[in-house]
Length: 567
Image 1 (cartoon, rainbow, N blue to C red):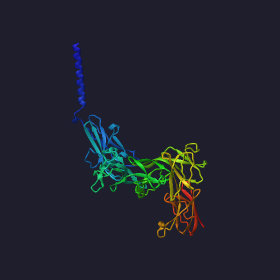
Image 2: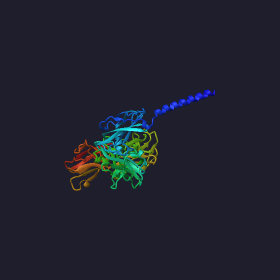
Image 3: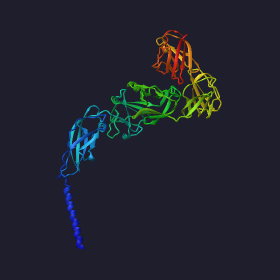
Image 4: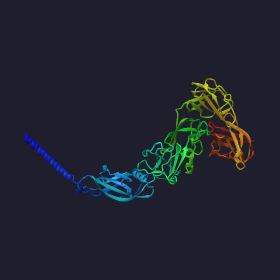
């Protein structure tokens, strides 16, 4: 039994010895085997095409080999011809098949971005070398070639640092918006709207990458690579503009961003303020009391105006930039009164507005139990007439939650008043009541009812005929302002002495400005006209004399008809 065990042990030892010898012969010492060099197949010079960003660029070579038959793995390294730091190349690409293939690919967009991050300009020949590195255990061999690459302009800039909304995190840096002119050509100008913390630093980067170039300020205040970090003295929301041709940076502090216009409760007199949500987005719930025009503006002034890009549904542009770059803009228009959530977006992804109307709720003004006028929701518990309602002193009025009068009724305990001025307005206390109320004079009224506040606000317009000689001393400033008389329904008239070659227009300054539209005849004695600040003056008085002038306005005051009749 012992002999058998000894024989078995000797057999096992012999097997281990034989296996160990075989393995030792395979794992030769480093100096006992060789690794040949791979051989690159020459590429043509490359012009990167922005229209095919996903097209693949292929590097190819003939394989290297190990005399000991070990596996070889490959990497392609692209770098500047004069590069000295091998650890910081432009890019590295592993060969296909997990590094074992004799080719490597990368997309046009990836190569373009890598060259941009390395600081190379677009549209010029960039001399680079590309090297295939073969690696086998601890041995390497290489082959390299030179080519030129022309990259396209798809450049981006980013903002990051302790002063910014994302902190000092370049991988999450905030992208700036690249600006375009009216011909849709890229400008080397960038813009961002963002909050900044006072006396903290930030930098401009050309990518969200640890390889990105950072830009700060030179002693002359210009942007340079690795310059002094930027900062602001006052905390706030800023528009930051970068001109990458002039290498300048400028700031515009936004104390408030508001919306103003004739579609709003206070017309062109007071801004409705939007709240900043972060990362270039503002939002607030806004009451639009009528159809009409409006704009956004900063700081309650006329220097930070934002308007709609003509021909687009919701694209916007800064007025000063649009005017400098041949971009056609116009006031925003809202078609239906209501209570809207207004979102203004000013970031790299979008310069746009979005309006979402609150779920429809209605109140109704009933006149003589026969005519019913819809009031649209324009705020929390607030409802406004969607048109001007021509009323007479003999009319009996009441407000109801249902169109047929079967709901809750509201009324006031006083006459709707009258007054002087261009836009006459007032307010009365509103209560639940089935009693009717009346107006104190015939006019076309607009109403806003606030159920929560218990108020009924009303207004109407007195119109004037303006008549002046542009060529005389004083010109517009020496104009005659002749008040017109209202008659039911929606009719204004006046008899006045008018002079040859004088200009004429109809105003209730400055909410209403009637003149000739583009399709109207400004020299005609009768016709149609529009309510628009850009409407043409009438130049229709060819013979001085006494004229009776009559205009009939439509229910929203957007258009009107007119007639001049010499007496």
